[in-house]
Image 1 (cartoon, rainbow, N blue to C red):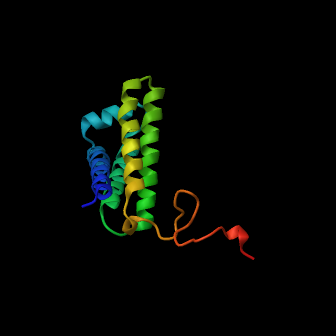
Image 2: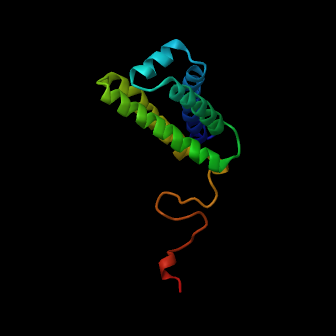
Length: 141
């Protein structure tokens, strides 16, 4: 197995475990999880809804296929983690900002390292060129 593939799976497994386990705990209304999120001002129904979406996002990132759903799952996890960072900052809990910020880095690693089979066909790559594009389209007539 190549280093890129190993790195992808390590990042992906860490993200799926962190987001999925937290999502299951929130969906099942584990008291410590619910109390922690309600302390930040979230109502119970929102905590449960986030838990369900986190669990589905973690599953989507792991399973083969579903490239478009994967893009949405990555975006949703990113939004969740940035929201967690902002909520912790707003509550004055600076140490609680560190885990979501670290996980954002791991999430970006998973997204950037994902193999071709897990990418959305025709999506732009870094550098602004779409897959299969050979030259600059602005020079075409």
